[in-house]
Figure 1 (cartoon, rainbow, N blue to C red):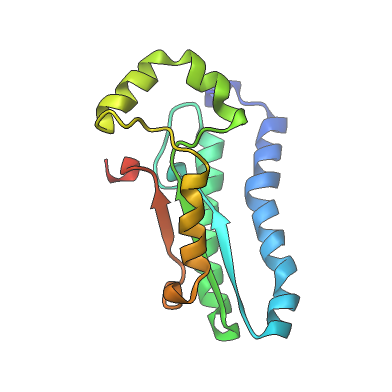
Figure 2 (figure 1 turned 60 degrees about the vertical axis):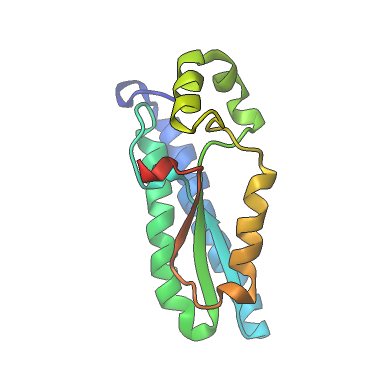
Amino acid sequence: MTPIGETEEAAVDQMLDVNIKGVFFLCQAVLPDFDRKGGGVIINISSIFGNTGFPGSAIYCATKGAVTLLTKTLALELRDRNIRVNSIAPGWFETPLNAGYRATDEEFMRRADERFGGKGAWMKPEELAGSAVFLASADASSIMGATLFVDRGWAAY
């Protein structure tokens, strides 16, 4: 996490490349195959921070918000081709990328435990899988352009 005044252009470019261009061009790349098959499902990964701000994360929040709006736009654009587009907005998941943060920010961890009734904010990656399976299934055939928050209620605050 870097405050806006300390964020370097290379970091902004990398975030734009991964979080916006990567998602956009991956969605574009699957279209010929989905058209041949008569449809398909795209599930983008946004973030709870695509819906709210977080100090020191301006470009991350902005790019994840862009993923959310891209998802809505593509859902409308592709529905007549029988392609459903939704996104999942994960909360705090334990990954190698955030291990250092989890280990050093004791105050955050204490507040997260209070906020989430002792269960804590950090979830295991496997807790996300069921949401993706559901959105890809026929049970979600009428869900288009939605963002499913998997965040232990974080976005409800």
